[in-house]
Length: 306
Picture: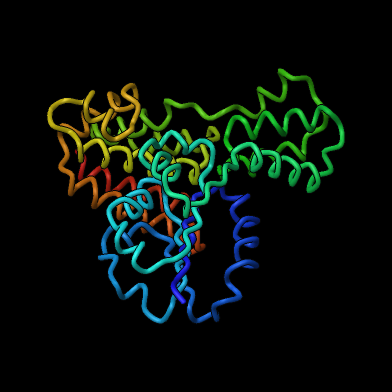
């Protein structure tokens, strides 16, 4: 029997439901000791994906960002095809813009595409409506609004819906005043503060947190930003527009990173991204407080980027 590889790239809430469905279908073929979970980029990016992963008929559960598992699919195609007779690819609607991957799946019948963007949103909405007994239209409408603002895979969504459950019914302008959508410029302002080596860096970040910026949300945004910068740096040859096109990072966002890309080497960015991944892991496993993780990270960033 050859291995089954499940490559999972789903919104966090719906992922659990989908994986349960897959386990019922596939995992009964394998004992617990034969399942290997790859849950961090380091296990693929900083180690060779070699034959050792396929020993003993192991089932690989790969849960990685799009860029990492797309790289796995494209670069290690022969390794996968020679060792696997069944791939299950779960891809959300918002990730279909990845043209290489999507065209590949359309041509190859062994890849199963499951689009779940709208379904996952409805599942999440249903979950919170039941959890908090959001019976009135006022609660239901604001529940939908919060999910739209922050996305189905955002930790911030859960926090804001928790807040919503504690509020009495108010007028639309009151709820919008109490729960505000994330500011897209926040992350760029913070990165800019760090790059400038601002002496009041920690004070300014602390003030933003005090004003409602969630440290976990900020860590997630920083991780995404450094992933984008790594992609841009990889394709950057003194032409930001071409780098933007090759990496898939929108040009208007790439322009905001140009100062860092010009002044920082690929390996420095990679080192910072590794550090960020380490703090993110400790944060999610409860080994470190969100604010402490953020300050440790900011300290590392400010030293390298000054």
